[in-house]
Image (tube, rainbow, N blue to C red; front, side, top):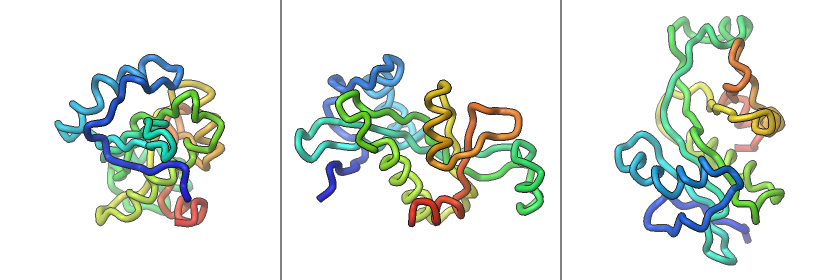
Length: 166
């Protein structure tokens, strides 16, 4: 049995969540619901099967990146559009009590699976890493930085299918 279940944000108690980063705690508590209602993103929660508490969350939205931000080798393989369709994980956080239990990877796997099963064109999933620790985490998960933006990383859906067994 899985340790967590993933649910779309609804009427959950978000005030007890603490990932150790105040801006992410505040985002979940005060802004995630509003942004979801305005359709800027969808927020997904990892709910502990033991405690029914929020152990983690991520947001997912549609986006695009400039074709020129990808390496020349990747550009050669893609259609010659100015922008490349992507999904963006805008926020991702794990509660302090759940850190070190591989929940971050499970949240990324869930996001990739949702993107893969959506009937829309989407070349990759993109993340904006907030610091060196986040960059290291995403690289460990298989993401690669954009050419001139080391804090913006992407993972091609075709690569993700194999890496995450989707």
